[in-house]
Amino acid sequence: MQKEKDRGKKKRDPLPETFDSISEAATFWDNHDSTDYEDMMEDVDFQVEIRRHVYLVPISGPVLEALRQKARSQGVSTETLVNLLLQKHVA
Image (cartoon, rainbow, N blue to C red; front, side, top):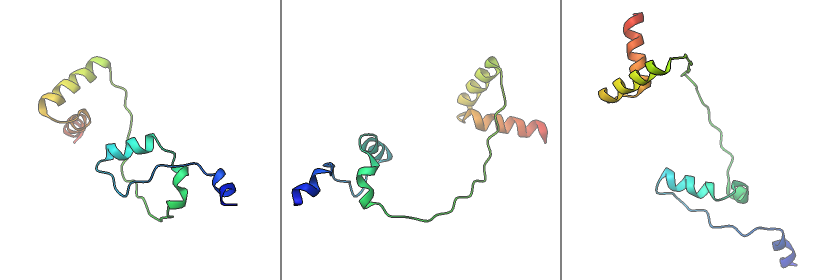
């Protein structure tokens, strides 16, 4: 009788208690199906406040490349540089 119950169940790798890095967790879940571990999952409640909005603005290729180079030379992201430059010019 026990064999009949086990027939429908897939054998699964043990779920690690912790992962040493996000990369290790990503690799595990890239190679495993979360539905195989549903019996180990718990329901959780949480709230999310989204305060950031992203707006897309077309920029010509040559201008974007110049911004990327300038940002690299200043050690900041292109996004940060664009926001700093715009703040200077609209204030």
